[in-house]
Structure formats: C-alpha cells, structure tokens
Length: 185
Image 1 (tube, rainbow, N blue to C red):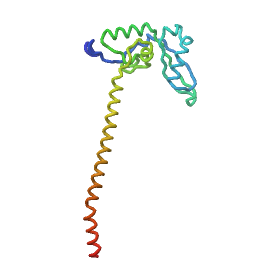
Image 2 (image 1 turned 30 degrees about the vertical axis):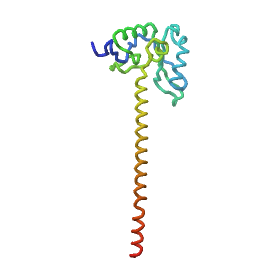
Image 3 (image 1 turned 30 degrees about the horizontal axis):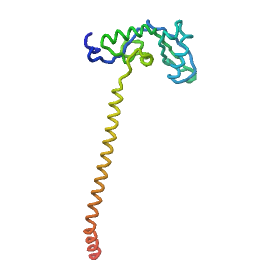
Image 4 (image 1 turned 45 degrees about the vertical axis):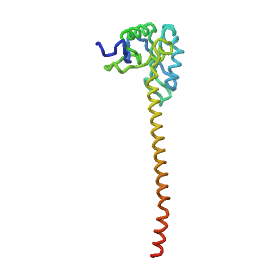
C-alpha cells in the first residue's frame, strides 16, 4: 500500500514483524532475575541453545511464566539469523521505512510484536541510531516548564513585596485609627 509507511523524502518509523517460522525458539527454566540479565545471559549462551554459531544470530528473550512463587522463570528464547534481519532492514529502508522495532509478529495484531532485535542491530550498526529529537523536545518542554514555575514564583514574590509596601504606607493611618478607637473606648 503506497503512502502508508512513508516516502523516500520523509521515512516513517514502523514496527517490522518477522514470521515466527523464520526464527528458532526454545523454552528454558532459569532462576529469578531481571529481564536485562536474562538477555545478557542468553547472548552468551546462544551457542549452547541453538545449532548455529552465536555470531550469526540475534538473540532475545521474554519471560513467559513465573513458577515456584517467583523463584524460577520459564523463559522463551528466540534467535533469528543476522542475514535475515539485514535483508529485512535493507528492504524496508529502500521502501522508505525506518524500522523502530524488529520482532516476531504473532496473533491477530501485526503491531503487537514479541521480542525486539532492534537494540542489538543498532549496537552492531545494522540499523541507523535512534533519533534524539524526542529527547531534545522533552528536555525543552521540561526547561520551559521550570522557567514557567520560576516566573510564577518571581511574580508571587513581587506581589508580596507590593502588598508589604502598601501595608507600610497605610501604617500611619492605622496608627491614627487605633488612637481614635482607644480614645473613643
């Protein structure tokens, strides 16, 4: 479909889904640990888990289930061949598509991807680096927000100073009123 993903002049980032049949998958049990630790461990263990050399694979993992009150995890480990990923990315880039995420598409929703090989591909130089523009815009928004709060505080201080000056200017009249009120009482 023309125009959905973008044009050569203005590429649009999208999720790139690979078919589950294009991947190697294993289920393994591991002791409880964080997902980043699991991913690091699977990158090191790829030679043992899959029949191909680890330097020709991209590996990612997801926690499928927690067992024994969270003490062990069932983890699904998936590997795809680098050549397949490079081919998919080059085809997408030629079509004016910048892959934001590259994963395994399962189920009815093509945007719902399992796994994400894009960070590994960026680290290996297979994908262009992520745009820093959103971070810059959010930093600008944060700076303007802080500036706005600073201006509100300064304006409030000015109003308080103005009120203090008004009270001081009225002090002689208040003293006269109090004197009159005391004499009258």
